[in-house]
Length: 490
Ligand code: ZN
Image 1 (tube, rainbow, N blue to C red):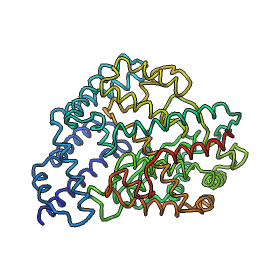
Image 2: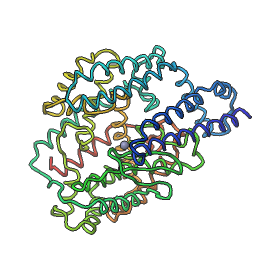
Image 3: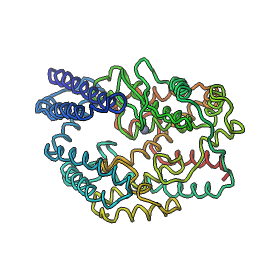
Image 4: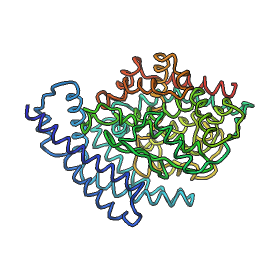
């Protein structure tokens, strides 16, 4: 009996310290004075040392050997503590430290290489990062699949083979949809008009509240790259403001509110336990995406938003609500993943998944990466990459050693597709509600079926519990075909 009690108390302090670490990271991106960067690095490294020692503390192994879970939640918590302990113990400390040092160096080299469009300057450090992650994967996999070993950090239980099958279903239909839209005569009016920063932030706050964000347990600040941070009673978001692009601010806010309300809606009893945060990157992204896209860019919700924007900003340069909906969902071919629309977005991810998996297993040499990228881009997007900063150098992930992370973005979209289909099945009045700006029934459904459970179930089981069906790419594809087929009349 005392093993579970001691373990739970010990883990609670580890979780609390991890929240402190997250808040230092939030502060660094929002409030920290520029001159504090070096000291902050030392502060965070000190805390990281404490956290690593706690996560590999030998007492964990003793407690885990004898702890008897009293209920389902305790059993799930023990499973997660065991996974973390085993993972942290398998990777030699000097290798872990070397990865931190090398990726920190790689980040600076990547920033410069991207600014100068100089792939050759980036490849040697990419090779170093890759080699270290291969060694880490070997330590973790113990003879198993290397890619799966890394993927497991971001999406526990998912495998490269399962992703490959799912993505093989997505790719031809996405390419076909992209081609049909490209040939369409329909051309949505470009978003125009400006609004001041205070006006945008005021509407962002209103919309965050409509999407259920609780400001008594959170706050909204500005950052260059928006993010959300924290769990339990302190979940913060950031947004970005560009006076010429009010929609960018609004939809960044909605996306981050999706991440943040997931954290805020987890059962309070799970706070500061391993169950007290979103269960995986993919499930997290499913919440941000369903808020942003399936709900936020729906015909029903945008008709309400149109009225609110006209009230606050004055006339918009679009004809009516239909035109506004088309503008918000405009398909615009481009090189950059983070700017991609719903039709193109997953094609970017599918490409990165295939390339990084081949790099890790050694089927693709680092020296051949740029050519492989450009060939694949031409095949799937129908245009040639014009320069490396629009191609292989555009994303930060590989310089940071984040291999296995990219596919969670598309998994999030696939999960969102499944959840959206179930939501529509259960809430026949959804469009009526959304056209009045009433998202409460949809948000209550997501909280009840998914969000409140936190880390109780594995990621796939979390989605299947919520929807009552199996995870499949089909609902997402049907949704995209239906929506963009209607807007572009194809
Ligand atoms: Zn996100």
